[in-house]
Amino acid sequence: MLHIRPYEPSDREACIALFKSNMPKFFDPTELPLYEQFLDALEKNVPGKAGNELEHYYVAEQNARIVGCGGLCLRDEGKVTCMAWGMVDNALHKQGIGRELLLFRLQKMDELFPGVAKVLDTTQHSFGFFERIGFRVTKITPDYYAPGMHRYDMVFQSPV
Image (cartoon, rainbow, N blue to C red; front, side, top):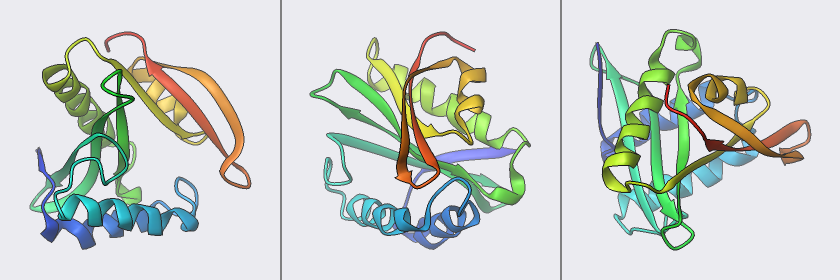
């Protein structure tokens, strides 16, 4: 059974290990320092300093082990909510963990920011996962994250 709870500073190394397990296909190695800075800002508990106006970050545990993490944020002066740094241990992909974590975050968005648009950006390697949940592509930017890693901007259109 998957247990999702708020991120704590003691989760840092497990989350970094999750990030590394997804390099280089889902995250470019040049993004690791950005993720570490994001975690640093969360650990200092400074809203907005992790990159957006308000951050909420969660970890997913299975059998007392962190197997996924991901967050949500409010940005553009409260006009949109966005997904932030979502990932699952690469060895555990296609087992429903990512789906459960994403649905949890969508529910949190509805609870915390009702009626606010939901957006995310991802790569060509995972945009299909988000499409199956109800997101649609609004823009593609080639080589945005790194050469060969294109950015797909997406908006939530319909419930699952």
